[in-house]
Length: 328
Image (cartoon, helix red, strand yellow):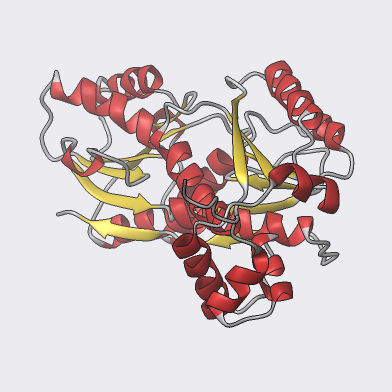
């Protein structure tokens, strides 16, 4: 009979990585102040030795569950899932788990998901808000929260967003410099900060080129495919339709493309916010504004871990730059 092998210990990991047991503990507990090369050595040793932490003992000792909650309006959306990928890639390096919850774009459901996460004793929550309201986030009391993609009213929090204003502004400005005569706009619910900021960028570019914002060619929907379809149809059926149209999110662009594939228009150019699958293959697309989706997730996770580890720094809103892809 073979002798039973002793379990791998923190001391074994420390010896393998050439660091102290305290450093191993700091890495395993998500201390982001550990030098990246040192953290990498520890993680490599953990993997090579097959070290498995006793999660129950760990939770009793640290009073943490090493679990993060993530709430999003939906998970069928590639944009949200790309953000979640960035979050998970960061958290798995420090042995944190995630609980995914969908609010289904419903305020009451968002509140219910928060109560569930509180019962699960998660160490922190990353929320992509379904609306502009945030009073109910107080449910989490002292549990750290980081907002992603959108800000809310009634709750002060760290947040990681794209620079929606600048991304829209640069795309519209580029088209105006290239000779666009009239640029229509298809946008989402302006109570959402992302929708408002993209519209503001569009308006500012028109203003800087002394162009009038024409209400006839500025339309708003709900960020969903059917809305994009009907709004593009409305624009193209005008007696004098615009020669360029700025569409402020991928799913409205998808709907607009569906309409355009069923009809025929000449000299049309589409400016699209969001570089998701198929966007560059949609008809008439000339400019795509790409958001750093996975980087948003990574930065949100890092910010949350800092808060979990006791950071008392002033709450911050990080706006990450977009990039513009020219397809013409």
